[in-house]
Image 1 (tube, rainbow, N blue to C red):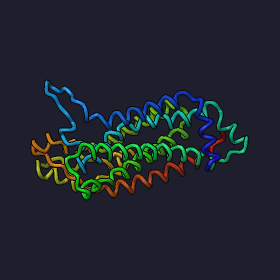
Image 2: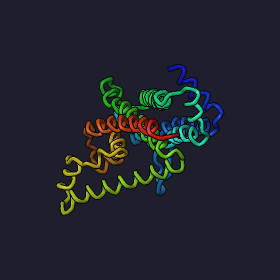
Image 3: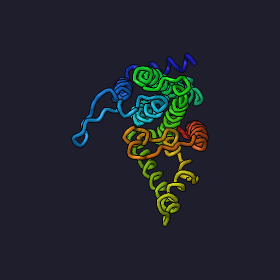
Image 4: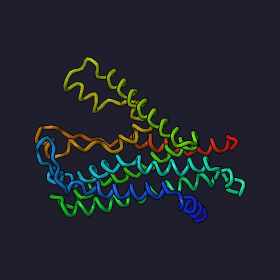
Length: 281
């Protein structure tokens, strides 16, 4: 393991995009977690997210993991650039000549992915706990840790996303093609999800439509990006303003999405290894 860590460290040490995006990501991550401490002007009204309850337990676990999850593409850039340069600079071929096996190559990338995911998760956990203990109006120990599972979901979401980008990077080798493929898949999943939703609620009214959306199984939820997204729901309905408007937040743990993410992780890892073994590099 130490050999693979050193290999990845020296590969990326002098690679400027790797360092720039790493620093940029973690700086923005910390800034976003503290965004609720500032006032915002919206349509002439002053809004303070802290007063809207985003730092209250147990909701804070949902808010922070959802907000930071939106930044995953920036850390994904690091993964894509790191892997793509292996092929564009012919480092992979040279490493294999020097004795690096396909298994070790995949292992080194998974190690990098795991470390980034773990560091990001620890930072989110630590800052969330600090902000919650500092600003939450709820201090009961049972409520403090009631929704801590969102941190675990965040780890799975991030790890799955990076495995997905690793697979695309090894498959397509050039970063521009990877991002084009990513956006095509993202748009494709959105279209399929929209078609499935429309087909199920078409002709339904109000309450019946809401019940179907909440309780019906949607195949599109098992697609890669959609299953990752479903792990952490949008928490905006948990704001005090939304509650005052009579909007209700309902959440059922997305077991199917969690299983789907783990299955997709295995598919992406095995698929990446299979591509490396089959292609003549």
